Amino acid sequence: MQILKLIGCLLDYPDQTVVEHRADIDALVKAADIDPKLRHRLLQFIEQHASQDLMQWQSEYDGLFERGRSLALWLFEHVHGESRDRGQAMVDLVDQYRQAGLEISQHELPDYLPLFLEFLSTQGRDNAVSWLLDMEHILALLQCRLEKRGSDYALLFQLLLSIADSKVDLDEIRQRIADEKRDDSKQAIDKEWEEEEVTFGADSLDKSCGDAQRKPSEGQRKDLDVPLHWVDFETSGRIQP
Image (cartoon, rainbow, N blue to C red):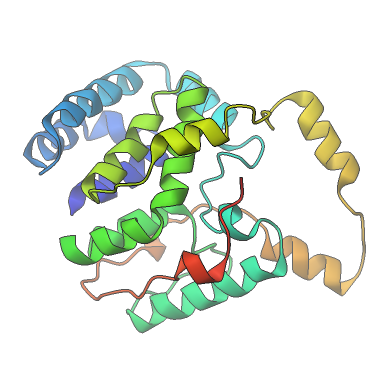
């Protein structure tokens, strides 16, 4: 399912890839087995961002996904937060990747959504849909939060849910986050820094390295066709509100 690889690319940090491969991307979207209305909107999304100044696009991306945690693209952030359970969940996921033949750097975070989507694109439709449904509540939460901010990036999550034929109750999530305070303001970020515990020594180093957010490199991605056993979010943790 190459459409999943494309969505992952669009969710990654913007570079010249979309501009340089625009013709191939448009052809892929037009041939993809997706909802026609969403296809049209996706083509509009690509046109809008590919035609704008790259630095402007990157600035928009930074403002959404790299400030605060509510729109984090690291899946377990929304399940475990910064608890130790998150580290164990990632260890388990790395082990599952390896069982499927995928090796990633020890510095990579396996729950980074663009990396995970690129992997799913090699797994066949049935497997990919199954894994998307396993994390539908995270995808829906991100969609609703992006809608609340008026961002067209919400479309990409809507598309993932549509591909999975998800029946998640979006209205319930919208109602739940209606009074949610944004965590990307200067005041919110300053408060988080003030509340962050400052420690030194081995434990501190382990924690900071374990939570480092790194994006996947092209050389660490492999095209495989082996089923992956996804972590059960129902038993591994609760979606963070």
